[in-house]
Length: 261
Length: 174
Image (cartoon, rainbow over all chains, first blue to last red; front, side):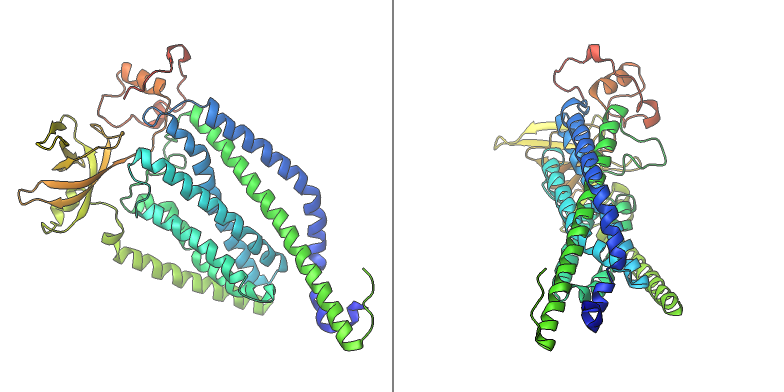
């Protein structure tokens, strides 16, 4: 049987634990996806239609209900990528590699949404689509870090071999997270300082804050659901590749007909 | 187990080294990382007349003078202040919608020989307060917020009831 053939047998054995992950995530995913759609819809419709205008921005404030949640989870996603990379480097947990591979493109898309909506807001409010201040530049660097991680992951023929260099890249890039967060406090920037996470009370009226927080929760649920779906896809893909490799080796070594699936 | 502990130690040590190196680098390049200088920065470290840079602060209340020059272009002169010091800025062209007295601005340009800052572009800087226009009006009517001043502390207003009866969808009053 396959288990007797040494190299593919070992690679299949690595997914003994992911088997339990597949069962659990399969049960969780429909609920998570439904909750994400529902909460996103409530938050975004509340923000875009029913929330009040802002005293100085007028209706332009509504871009915030997409921009700020996208920014939160662009950074939250990178934190997840860094934690997964840390677990992968230190404990060599195979699921951590899969999580890192699954998170990076989703985080890149959220960062792109954040940059694009910010630019659309910047032109009418600041008078510029883009400026090279510390906040905007550090978020652009975050986007490039995600792209670099994706490129490095796909640069190897065997995806398992990419795990360690990609994890090192992700951990080095994690230094950018505090820089993004505190850039508006450490340096003069055109971007405004934090409104919600302040030591003082949030500088956002409750009628604007609630839809923002709900939209933020919805974006987070959507991020989690997409990452879970991608993790399952990556695991299935690797399992298929391992099975195909095992068959190929059996066929070459023992010249025995490949059994039907 | 020891191998895992050794890997943990290596990763943590590398992280500590990287963090320290980054902090030192960012501190060393402090002057290049700021997007603009305040009038106080400028007083402490004067700029040579021909070097372009950005100046930022609030538009001083009562300082804005608008005029039309010989070519029919809109000319604006105003003072940018950080509370301690102020500098006179002149600009020819269209200003962003958010530009007004008391508003944060960032102007890009260079110093003229007479010490005036001649701007080639002016950006409005948005502050971090978000409130419905009705709340802003109520605060101003109640005397909690003087025109041209920054908004009062957030805990005064961020849970304030909005009087919807007064909220006709008209132009925004700043």
